[in-house]
Structure formats: structure tokens, C-alpha cells
Length: 115
Length: 116
Image (tube, rainbow over all chains, first blue to last red; front, side):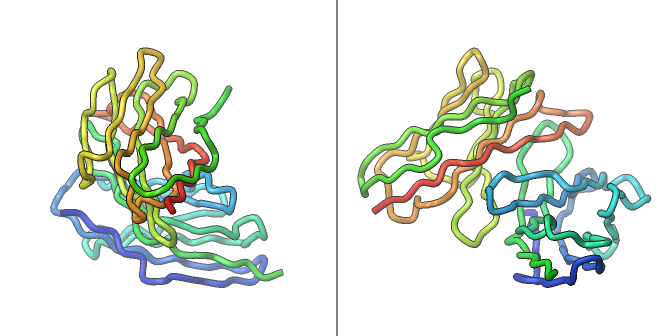
């Protein structure tokens, strides 16, 4: 069975600084996707960034980038130039390839941004 | 373009009762998935509906059932409510089952269910 582990329940960062959130996963599949979702207090889950397992290049979306280490099964999220609006719960998620939409989530990391 | 909508926003029930939660997918989407998010936890996959059929199911008892209508909207029904069913229930929609490509899922704001 696939599992996703986030070992940092809470993190804090100063505004304009950089923070890295950690995620490890376990799978025997070769075709899969990894995601970072943001859940603000409004509760609506928002996709931040995704990574296809077959792609060697790390995904980047503006201030958000990932460090995908496939052999180590590690998938960390780096937020640069942190903003107050980045404060939220961040979830790492896994989805195997094929005809499924089932996401397996980690337990989340609560990110606080200090002004 | 309306995103995923869910109703009601909040719901309070007592043990043993039954509840129905509703979800309207994002315009153009035909696949709906339901997740249960207990307090302080990540969402857990309940099941997924496509073409009005349950296509995949997570590790949830038969008390959890669902339905998808011809307009792609969906309902989640929970019978014989337990205290442990208290959670945020999230609906996510997407286009198709994406067998050969990636299809983004869009989440609704959720329904907060409290069982007393």
C-alpha cells in the first residue's frame, strides 16, 4: 500500500524568507504523480504544484518549487519570498498512474508566516 | 465559471441518524470523488463516481454510500452515524478518469458534519 509521510506538524517562516516543507512517500509503482495542496482556513483545498514521476526536472510554479528525489522517495516543497497569504495547512499527496483519481494525503504541515 | 459547490456548509446530527451531503462539480467535469477529513488529519478517499457508477472505493464501511446523477452532481449518504463520523467532507471533481494523462481535481469548500 502506498503511504505519504509529513514529519513536520508545524513550521514558521518570516515574511520574505524561504521555507522548505518535507514529504516522503512509499510506493512500488513506477507511474505516479505527486502533489502539494494548500488548505487555508477557508477549507478549500488548492493545488500548489504537481510532479510527474517520469519527469526528472523539478516542477516550479512562480515562488513554489519542489525537490523531487525519486530514489529516496522524497518530495519537498520550497516556498521563496514567503507572503502572509501563504499561511495555511500544506498537504503532500500521491496518486498512482492509470484510471484513478484517488489521492493519498499526508497528515499536513501547518505553516505560519510571521510579519 | 462556477467551481465545485457543496451543501450544506455545516450540519449537526445525532448518533444513529442518517445524513445526505451534496456536491455539484465544476462546469464541464464529469467525475466526482469524496473525501473525509477528520480534525488535524489529511483527507481520506471514500469513493469516486464516473458515469453514474462507483468506480473506486476506499476503506470505508457500507454505511457510506453515494450516487451520481445524469447532470454529474453527486450525493454522499452516511447511515447510522457514529461520533467518529464527525469530520469535514470534501468533494472533488475532474474530467474523466485520466487513464493516459493527468487531469486536475478541483475541490469544494467542504461540509462540516458534527455528530453528537
